[in-house]
Image (cartoon, rainbow, N blue to C red):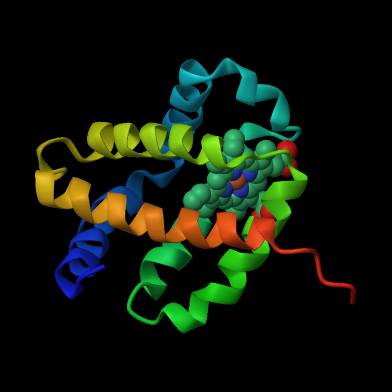
Length: 140
Ligand code: HEM
């Protein structure tokens, strides 16, 4: 990601943060609309799950300019996702639902530059998660 893209993601996320709860629910509603077969993978309460997701996105956004601070968290998250039954293809569906949610939440503030910057951020995050999911789990 370029420094300008990082700034763009941070700037637009400050607009989403105050409506994070609604955005999270909107995201999962959209995700299960796009692919209802994903619903059974989620065993817990979706409101709780939604808060966890938004929190993780906040941590990632804050760490975009200091990647070394978030890499271990993201790798561990990716490895856990393999255990949830998540496949590489699912990440594309999540990308679509996430970009759609940002568009709803940000309206005209979701400019083409913002979309590009968020796409780059998501690809970075998903790439690291998928790579970690392919690693054998540590023995100890
Ligand atoms: C960038 C992408 C993603 C992020 C940031 C993310 C974030 C999270 C977080 C923070 C949790 C809470 C549990 C934990 O920390 O291990 C979680 C759980 C989960 N995520 Fe993701 N996730 C991502 C992608 C996906 C994808 C592509 C799927 C596929 C449908 C998915 C399905 C799940 C499931 C099934 C759970 C467990 C829910 C349960 O406890 O029942 N996630 N995710």
